[in-house]
Image (tube, rainbow, N blue to C red; front, side, top):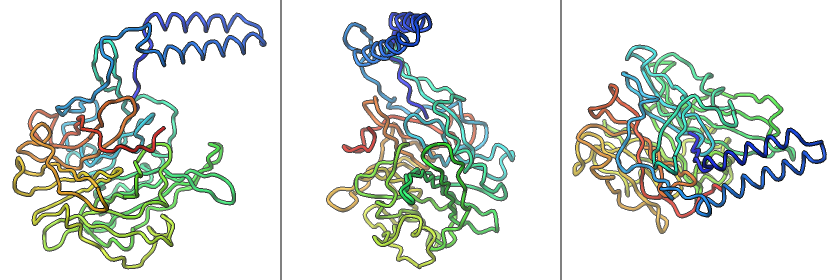
Amino acid sequence: MLMYLHRVGKSGMLIVRFLLSEILKTSVLKNLFAFLLFISAVLVMDGCRNHGIKYKHQAAWFPENPIDIVEINSEFDDYNSILPETHFGKRLLFSSNRKTGAANYDIYDGNFYVVWDWETGNLTFHKDYHYGYDDNVGKLVHRIETEGNQFAPYYVPSDTTIADKQYKTCYFFYSSNADSNIYYSRMMYYITADDGLSTGEITGPLNIPFLGDEKQQYVSFYGPDIVINNYYVPVDNFTEMYFDKTDEGISNIYKINIPDSLSFIRFLTSDYNYPKIKVDAVNSQYNDRCPFVNGNFMVFASDRPGGYGGYDLYYSKYENGEWQEPVNFGDKINTEYDEFRPLPVHVMEFNNDLMIFSSNRPGGLGGFDLYYVGIDNFSDKYQIE
């Protein structure tokens, strides 16, 4: 999703167009000066939103009531989303059974971005927008098998140094029963040179051997102060892997401690039977599903008593070395129907954070729809500059 904020007014655009016309008229030597003048003017206008250019609205907020993403949704079930690029990105990944007419689920990738207008205060979504196009995500999605069902997409980009050369590694996870009636958590990764000139290779899909077989298993990762973003996630600094696991018909949230001696990729491909630790602080005697960790903030879905009906969305904060008592997001987000797979995202320039989730509440396009809503800032520390 591209968070693209309109800042330059009509007068600013006239100045920009004038400078561009002057650039075209100048000689080669003058061209450099004119170009620097152009850049300086844009930066001045961009940095002086409150000086000289007055807007009715001086702050950007995601709405406090959920909004159906009609640009993406269909009459079928659209849910299980992940947003791999949280700033200057574009691809929302999600599961849908639209292709098979409500039969099997596939993972789709949809382009959309949001525009905040400083003059009107309106927030609108658009799709099919390409900014800084990078098709690493698309290459991974197109590698996924189409047999059976595919759920629970999860994506994280990282940088890797091999022989003093920088590489970008993209990790993609999902749950699939393509090979049988049993679900397995699968992963693949794509390594490409950071110079953008080399063609990378995709490894996988591979089963994550130590997770075994689980229905629609959701994975997520935690590391001290690591916030998922589009630029760089130090995956080797992840210390814990979170997932949901079903025992005797009840799903709960578990974690695995990642050994300090193993790199992220060596951990994922190991067949060692790591201890699976139940996270008692957030679990109940009911179903607790699809945890997603971003920074020191965990969101998940639960059908425990005390909610508003069906699955509700909850959050927990990591403080003093442990997860705190879960808190229900309240009746502005939850309903008597099912709310599922929440995804918290920090976005620069906004005064609150974004959460995407799915719900089968009335008023949507049909089945489960994807919604977005504003939530309180979930972390005081961000890895985004």
